[in-house]
Length: 175
Image (cartoon, rainbow, N blue to C red; front, side, top):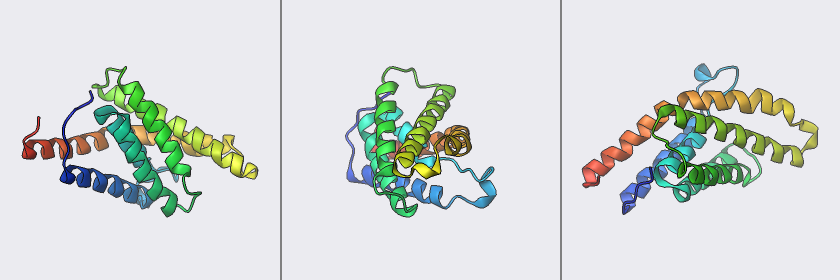
């Protein structure tokens, strides 16, 4: 459900801080929590969260912020992550207006689908830039396991972010 509320500067700073914190956590994911050298895509989970909760505009700005940080931190072509995340943010934002997205399984399924699409798009662009790397093997060994891992951490991330923003609304006198 899309919420309509006037936001203030502290709301935007809190949102910006959460996106940067998620990107930092994603780039510095502890080795102990990696499964077969795969870590979840926390920025993508946030993009889907903001697409469901606030619409495609907030999701696309989240994608821009998180993707830009990941492009710089992971030393990829500038705009590679941004482009993939913005397309996924727009897609999920438009799709969430047509879904009943209150159930956790729907949210995890949407994250799974978005993560697979983002992985295929990311590796397709990478394949166009460097054909020697191949495309099918990275998708099967990187994108698909990361999509499942992202879907598994979806409830944890959604509950945490929902509590942070709901607590801020309660303190500020919102809904």
